[in-house]
Image (cartoon, rainbow, N blue to C red):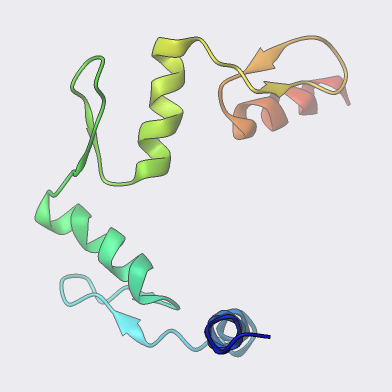
Length: 105
């Protein structure tokens, strides 16, 4: 095992252990919300700063998170990667599919 992989694993394990310990060492100075990871804090701080670094090339809409941009881009591409396990209905977001699947029970 390489040193880099070992150290990355230690960092990942420590971050994971925070879920169980409740340790949230990164605190927002604006609203006192706390986080287990520094990256999560930095993403959160964009809410306060108004920084929206991810821009849709199609329509110019901006986002604080890259994942939100990728989800938004499905509007333009027509991609619907989530299909209901009970019928053939398809969705752009997994959460919408899961909500829909609840209508079958």
